Length: 156
Image: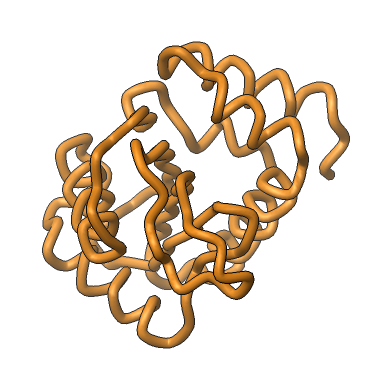
């Protein structure tokens, strides 16, 4: 599954000043709502927060992968945020997070949710991904770089 099919330049945010993990979750929920992916940002925020309370989605290497399933969406979608400053995300490796890759998927589609999570995890582990995020000058450049990475690297 190609992540770029679930991402859009309007869901890529670069150098966003966010002070902490809670602000990240709120930003993600509001961004998904503002782009019409979910109807109610508060419902998604509650889902993201509940997931974080189970276990941090800080996957290591400076990347956070907050995700939730929601009855408030009909499509699975990905959003990417490059924070202006690193944030304590309670990651397993204790490295502060600067890159957030968020996912929302429809409730009742756990297989789709897990497939996208697995694809995101593989993409995030590829060194070229982090380099592309760090060097991107604008959302379109980053989207194109992610698409090219996925087209040239056999993830699936």
